Amino acid sequence: MNNEYDDEKFFEEYGKMSRSRDGLSAAGEWRQLKSLFPSLQGKTVLDLGCGYGWHCTFAAGQGAARVLGIDLSKKMIGEAKKRNTKKQIEYRICGIEEYEYPECMWDCVFSNLALHYIEDIEKIFQMVYRTLKRGGVFIFNMEHPVFTAGVGQDWIYTESGTPKYWPVDNYFTSGKRNTRFLGCNVVKQHHTLTQILMGLLNNGFELKAVEEAEPPEEMMSIPGMKDELRRPMMLLIKANKK
Image (cartoon, rainbow, N blue to C red; front, side, top):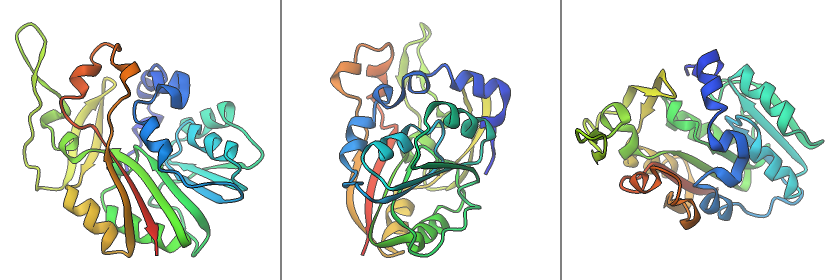
């Protein structure tokens, strides 16, 4: 997994995003994502790709007994330790692919906007299933396949600069996608909807919810947000270990 998030320029630009400055309340998908969580009172929670640690603080605030947030980026973990510290939370510099996934360790495994950087996503599904306790819950949010299959992950614009349409190409060819994000070259991984959903089902999970993120009405006044709704950007999934 590449680590653009430790690039100084990229990290500086990431810090300017509204979700970076203001936390979960500024994330358009949070209303839907929050509703997918079970009761976390007394539970153990693993956050894969924890970033600034906003979701770790949420879990601790919901009564989780232990929360571990892992992230490959030293800068992200450093920021998480500054912004989101509670006695139940531990942070560790560790890639999603490198974590040991101890058997039957966690009640809830969560990941927000990180799995589209993983090449072998089914391997992660296998390891998450392994590390969940019986009846445990896996909740994740990743970039929608229509978004990752976008040509350059950008609109085709009119001469005046208005978004005209969102181009999709090579949808059924999974793998590396080179794109620009926050002014930097970023490598992501494209996975089809079939690969994602069947990857979960083939590894023993029971699907409980599959949603496409729609920002709430109160965010429609943000410049460009209405254009964002013209194509799906995020895919939210909840799956249980039987």
